[in-house]
Image (cartoon, rainbow, N blue to C red):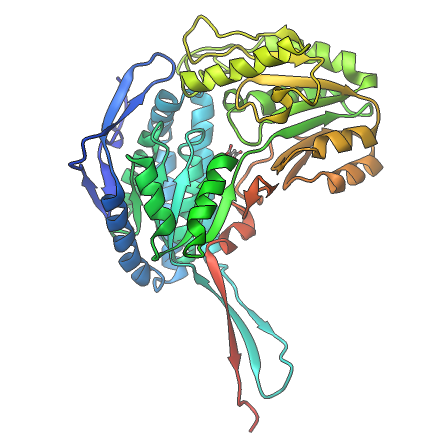
Length: 486
Ligand code: SIN
């Protein structure tokens, strides 16, 4: 079992309307460690009724919270930020145990999640409106920003702390209440965060965290008339379904959906820098991020050098349980995830791609896939058309800038893209032509609280982080004040 300094962070109840509760429903959420299949916890199974109660409590709490001055909302968020950092080691241990990522990455995720809380605590005080020059002296045009109201958040297993923190923080900063449904695979991190929220002194009911029947809870969170906004991070397929459910009550939505990021290296690039970035971007969280590089396009002039160095760097990565020292890559979240990554590799090899590293399940366990390098990949292969969500780099050679731009943009999604070039003209041309919401130029680790995270096309809409992230939780209200002439 986990050796935590604050064992009370390991919660096995739901956080509903400010109370820790169990339910009478028959199901259980069983949480297992993907590195060794150890059973970590069994949680009660929330459903439609719990979701309704949480929404009703949020509705009441939000009315009060919207009237709490921004400075006080900010102070409570800063308290949460401090609590997250004070418990960083324990939160990271819980995260590694249920999700698999190496402990150093898990600690990084807690700091990353906390940075959104700090950022939005600061932004809460800057929720400015506008005064717009009026068309007549008789009136004034004033714009104010108001909280959207009750928000529901559905969050994924790949960043069980940070994805939740970056939804809860702007919601609370803007004056909203929030009902959260974290992934059933990794609920312990969410409940640990809820424990800290509970301690910080936020009003009861302002935040609830439910796990259990995903269909029932998800349905209530996307159809209840009192929920005014749904924020989701996850796959494009599920995002489309949630959007359809939200349509009936015309809810605001923010959708952070799938990607299939191109990583382009031009002949004029610094190849060593590109290789370092390729490893960091591809193998972060074992390839299980929606901004991980998937499709590597390397220009003919640097192709051989890049591939040789990339293969060498990959061969030096250490696979293992996240809590062991020196581990770079942990297990995938479950066996199903590992199987689908292995299928992509098998299909690519059967269609003519060559393996330069990895390619197999590791003897370490069912969820471990070796870091894999495939070359001679072609755009028609599934590994190129689909987001792999695993430790697989698919490499293609290209000749001209025109060719690679057509290939890079030829996907239905548009989340993140990366390219390496030292030519200033090309940098601007390519940055502007890439049809993606985020572009890394000579840089592949781009996520941070100050920047707007989000995609275009079927990667979704809305932005998280930055000054834009708060707008997603506010409504613009226009006041026309007339009769001002004497
Ligand atoms: C994600 O994969 O959903 C988020 C990754 C990030 O925040 O960098």
